[in-house]
Image (cartoon, rainbow, N blue to C red; front, side, top):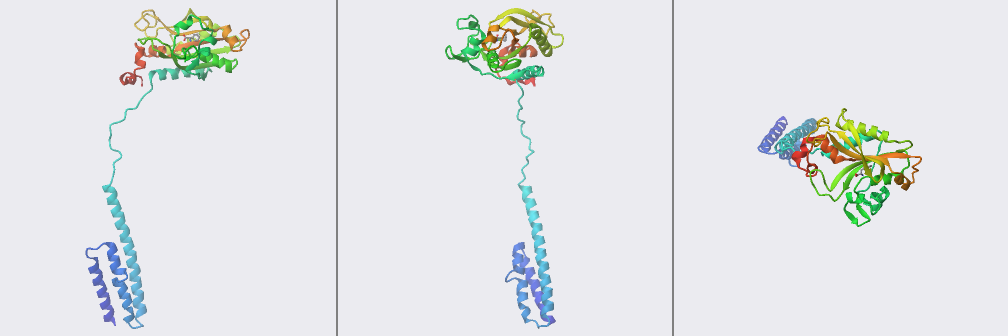
Length: 341
Ligand code: PHE
């Protein structure tokens, strides 16, 4: 009997050896544990053993089978890991590969200055409002004390959408009326944006430019308040040593009206190319809000007074950066724009 078992084991080992030669793990598994596999047929042949030997041999074979199963599983996992690693290695994409860097944009000088202006006025308690670029004749002219036949219209000729009625605003002052119709004093607002005039383009003119409108209406507002605030503004932008001066002027919606000059920050008032030798640079128009304008907005001019100012944002930007041709602000030449960031 011993002999028979030994023979069977030897046969099995031989079969496994033959089966593993050049085979895949799956094929070996079938050859050993499969339906017609070596171990399976060995099990089948157990019946030929004498009854008293069967339990012992059977137990031994079952244990061997469990061990084999375990080994196949382990080997299979190892192979899988190895293949996966090889596959990942061969299919690797290097996402850190160097590419030419994409140029990063920066802020336009006008925007840098615009933000600074807004910062300055909001820190003084002004509210930022918005008003339309496409305006009616009423808000842009009529309500600002500029009736149809007024000569001031000539200076601000613009682009009409509906002749005589709807136009591209010539001044952010239109926003003063919109605010005063909506809100009652105390009012402290600024309004920043594009304005349009049918001007020819040159170093100091453009049919599109930008204004910052300011309006303060309250009890006992005087020209001293206007002057004090504008002086702070000029010092903030052009340096502590900056002086300002008021020159009498005329705007239909302010009375009295002034043009405001700042001492030239480039030559400290001695006279240079930027200030055309005068030592002064005009920075804005301003004045005390005209009684008629207040009345038109249902604000009692005997109770309330106010001041308004209009700053040319493009002008301030050219002064701050010493830009000698305003056209450069609109040409989008990257070499020019790069200098400000
Ligand atoms: N709107 C005027 C202009 O465009 C400027 C201004 C604004 C003057 C407010 C006085 C008060 O020239």
